[in-house]
Length: 202
Figure (cartoon, rainbow, N blue to C red):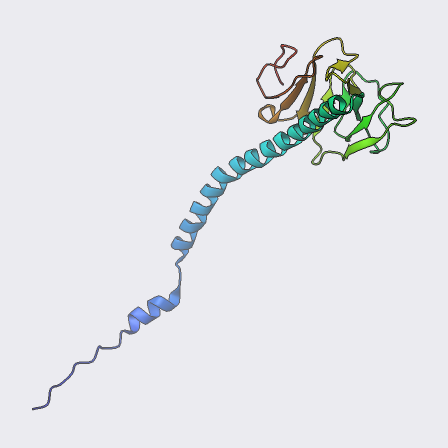
């Protein structure tokens, strides 16, 4: 007796349905979901990347000032950090808020202070900051000099360097500050924190 095997019938409707791909409604739904995710994710991503960049920049200056202070103590000499435009000489800008975003130099500093001359040696050179960030020092501070004890020469009191994400109309939450006292203490602050000058980092 022969057993008859039943074969699966061909289903042309199912094959045609598979060949059609996504419907218009399905495509629009996916596009809507992607748009919502981008609307949520892009601002958060921008905040993280910008905030991290400014934190990195202010910490870079902090590290260089700490290096200058350590070298002054170790070598028993005056070591200065000054704003620069050309990475070769110190800026002579005497504005109330001196720009530092164009870079700074660390150098051994003999008299006259704050200028590279004679036997002065450049120890490090920092290039200008990117993305139109602005970094300014208050009280017309063009340079900072550390003596052999690690104290700061020539400052009447604490100073603040403020970093913004652009020249005008900056985003307040991105702001970063660096405070320096006459005893050589260095600290960084985020927007809203109180600086060594007892003012708000803004």
